[in-house]
Amino acid sequence: MKLEVLQFELNARKVSVRVKPDATLLDVLREDLDLTGAKRGCGEGECGACTVLIDGMPVDSCIYPALKAAGKNIETIEGLGTEDNLHPVQKAFLDEGAVQCGFCTPGMILTTTALLAKNQSPSEEEVKVALSGNLCRCTGYTKIINAVKVAARNINKL
Amino acid sequence: MSHKVIGCSVEQINGSKKVTGKSKFTDDLKMQGMLIAKVLRSNIPHARIKKIDISIAEKIPGVIAVLTAKDIQGENSVGIIIKDEPVLTDEKIRRIGEPIALIAAETEEQADMALAAIDVKLEEIQGVFDPEEALQPSATLVHKGGNLLVHKKLRRGDAETAFKEAIVTAESNYITQMVEHAYIEPEAGIAYCDQDKVILLVSTQDPHYDREEIARVLGIGQHKVRVIQQPTGGGFGGKLDISVQCHVALLARATGRPVKLTYTRQESIIASPKRHPYKIYYKSAAGEDGKLLGVKVKIICDTGAYASYGPAVVTRALVHATGPYSIPNVHVDAYGVFTNNPVCGAMRGFGVPQMAFAHESQMDILAEKLNISPWEIRRRNFLTPGAITGTGQKLGQSVGILETLNKVQSYVKEQGWGN
Image (cartoon, rainbow over all chains, first blue to last red; front, side, top):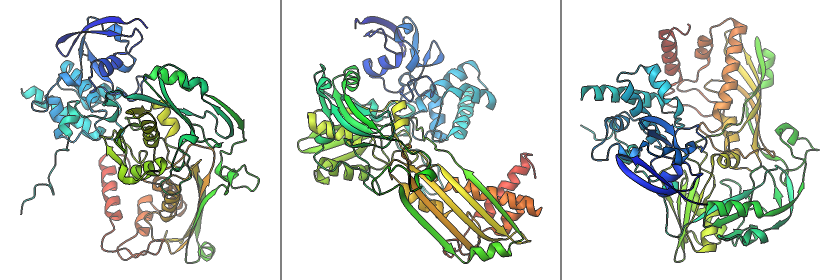
């Protein structure tokens, strides 16, 4: 299969990568760029483990054609904070015990980041609606919702 | 005295790796020269295999190994309690998803092409999908030894007399469904050889059991198998059984290269064990005061094509048939039955939640018949310290059920959900 050149902005850096025309954005991130923070949970846009931000919007990268990302701004969990310098959303998830097995966590955190960029003080209902595309099977929703509220408060204090 | 751990909120080990996406789950790992594995699985539930032809699949460019049952040098069986499940079948198919052949190829596309090129000749057999039908003398046999996996009995006091003396009785049948765990991380494993050792990196809940089974299947000592549990993206009991472990180990030994097998979501749902569906026939007898005099219960647990944790789940169904109640006369029969349904194994609650649906519904029915509140009838029957359970265990110093119910009742009132 003939490869196509794909250029986009990834975590504030310009990247250029040769991809199969039928590759998904998740394939390119995981296989070609070695960014494995976005996970393949279902492969059909149901579970949200593969969530990345495209121009600030949370998107299921497992069903997003890679070539459609041309020229766009992509943020993955690797671009958010580091272990030594956590982003307030990452810190809130850790502090509030909102991380169990951790497989859904990167997607949950990115969706939360997108929500809080638009809405600085979301109601519980707004948090639930925003996270409705991210599944957790450890049944940790109560703590996840709580972590989003704590993150919102902490960001507002900054 | 101050503690660093007890009574404190302790940060999860590796938590900072999980929130930054640095945690390496099995499918996140790559190794030099690593092959991709696929499993050929049956798409029909009951059949006899006549012939497996891998000659075309083997010739596909990039395909490094195609393995069938005859390539297994050790024992071709796994199972936590009974070793009744073939690693690769070459005789009989007992369920949809039964593994028949393994492929290792340079790319996923090549592995998929090889899967499609394997020719399997089958003779279909009528399947049995209802556990009660499976117990009939005329039923098709799933296993040679019969369809009854296990029958467990619990007898205490004299239930017949209790029903004669009862003021009120309740008799209902309950059916519960099969449930998939649906952990967000599908099963995944990588195997590679290090001199004469086989190393596994795997998403699992039971690495010690995995090691034992891999060694038996490869026909080598356990000291030559090392299983490393990678961060595991949920299990809930569903990753206690063998999934990819023996398959990647066989392929790594056959090719001498690292081999990765990651299930798709579809394969995970088809191949993994489930929660046992139950049919429960429940009769309860109570006196005028609402106190339980006796219960008679028959439970039929569908374990699917293989035993997995079935015998243990059936025991738990039996033991928990009486719920948190003090019942002097108890007569319970619990059956684990083979069918051609998906294999049922361990899942959160391990056979007990199904029983709660039945014994709690019975309490509500009795309360209504006696015009007692559903809270009150439970309080009158709860196990307390010093009470004897259905299995004859005298309870010790603490039984938390009354305190729990009181808290639930306060909460229900607070929320305005009722009385």
